[in-house]
Amino acid sequence: MVASAIFITDLTGKPLISRNYRGDIPLTSAIEKFASYLVEVEDDDKKPVFHVDGNGEVVVETEDVGSTGPGGETFVYVQHNNLYLCGVTCKNSNVALIVTFLYKLAGVFKDYFGTLEEESIRDNFVVIYELLDETMDHGLPQSLDSTILRSFITQEGNRMADDSKSKPPVALTNAVSWRAEGIKHKKNEIFLDVVEKLNLLVAANGTVLHSEINGAVKMKSFLSGMPELKLGLNDKLMFEATGRANQARSGKSVELEDIKFHQCVRLARFENDRTISFIPPDGEFDLMTYRLDTHVKPLIWVEAVVEPHRGSRIEYMIKTRSQFKTRSVANNVEIVIPVPPDVDSPSFKSSVGNVTYLPDKDAVVWTIKQFHGGREYLMRAHFGLPSISREEADGDHKGGSGGMDTSWKKPIAVKFEIPYFTVSGIQVRYLKIIERSGYQALPWVRYITANGDYQLRMA
Image (cartoon, rainbow, N blue to C red; front, side, top):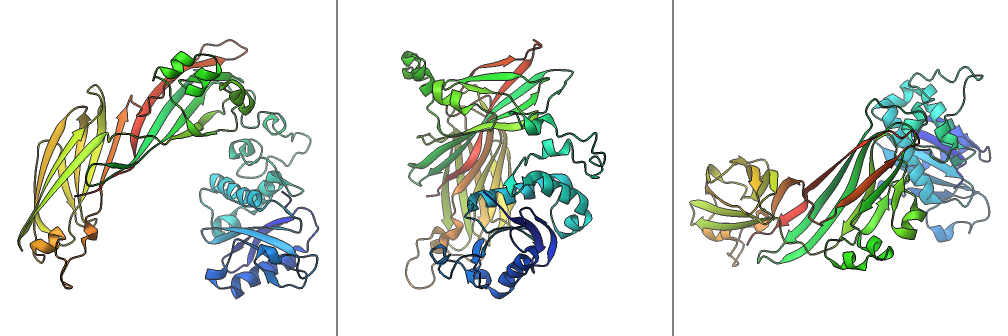
């Protein structure tokens, strides 16, 4: 990627701040071309990437670029609140990388100023110029980690005044750019959370239409020095790669898909023998995310029976059942049941928990603080129907135009969190911490399964 210049404008294209890195384009002219594009092109026709040829004509289609002759500039921009962040280049650059840089740059500004909008730009010119200088050099992206940048660019922007004392931090020049040297903690600890979210869609007849597990291994590191960590999971491919095929076939291993690692993980080592080896950043970060596209039975089953009574009232009978092991407990369970939009006079009776009617959401929320495994509970709800006949409420009226729209019969949504449990069966087999000073560190591991997009369609 080579970006000739980066500039920030308001929504009308008026420039707020700019930086010309290579000097190979007239920056003032480029900003004027961008402003005229914003004004002259209709919103529906605007694209985040466009080319202006040597004659000043806007070229949107990629196959037309260069057809009018050599020269011209390509503009790549993103919008954030009431600002446009734009990169311009006259080279055949990697557009996706420029877009990524602009989003990361916006993230750095947000970390520094709390919010990124026109006023925060005007209030922090000095710091922004320093950040623009350090995040890109001669059009090539550099460090975009706000933790590292804060070590030598302060909010006041005055620490680089003395050039004799100003040295770039080691994290910018060494191979471990995500961790500074000399970190010390009184108590060396590392916390590891395996968090899985279950996306589930169940048909009205009980058939599971879609089930997917999205997992993340989240870490919070408070380790001194420059520690080397090794993480072992019950990964099926790792067992096979290390000659332990019996363990891979035992059913206690998991085949992970779509794995995405933090930049600290040594990918070559992982691809060679599936070992997850890394030097962690200090503080909180996501070590890895993964996905499992596998058939999962509903952890919390909900069955709804709706009984409309002609022209007067409607009754619900909701039965819910936990289908996980009895030693596990689901916390803060919320079952959201849709109801018709104009019901009144709600009354509820439940064997456990609290039931609340939310008229603004046209829903009933049944809250169960602790739902133990292998349990079944019942809830009845009764509403008045001032304006809907039985046929309309039931959705069975098919003749004429009198039938009611049954869009209120949206799927039942369930929210929950089950600690000390993973639906995929993933396990942390070991977490080794090696540091040259030889200190003893405490690793803490926790498992959590929560709902993702978890829905059961009503009959």
